[in-house]
Length: 176
Ligand SMILES: [Zn+2]
Ligand SMILES: [Zn+2]
Image (cartoon, rainbow, N blue to C red):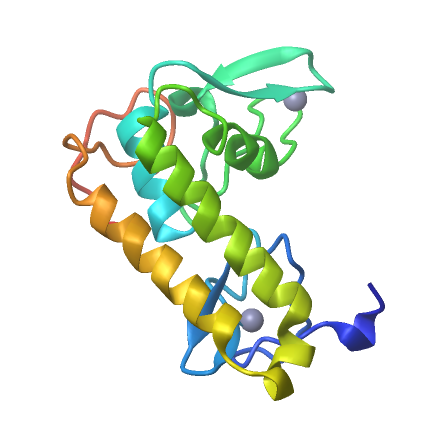
């Protein structure tokens, strides 16, 4: 894809990538977090908190190590990004990739999460043409996201993500 075919974020004005976390603001697209375009969405954080806690969610190729979620150091300022504690490599893509294939998620939840991600990706890729062609995909994205959120209401009680360092037991610090 050439840069000129990419939609831009209405908030920061930078081009959006289909791998970025994006959200719809009215008819426009925006980063979920302009400072960290690939930050996890609220839904992804909730799902990880509910299901991704007790098993390996990321492998660091550099260090040849596997990590559970609480073992990935998240710094206080940048609390939602996940780093390898040894090489400081950013594991966010690994964590996200794991989430969408994680077998501890109920099938229905995983399907809906994938559907929401797929339609959002397609929307970013085709946003320019859609601006003229109509709102079908935009609506599809909204529906997929709403459907995911509705399904997630029935989730078991969630824990918060590790906001500081490993071993923190304070579960009430961070609302998501
Ligand atoms: Zn932005
Ligand atoms: Zn590493």
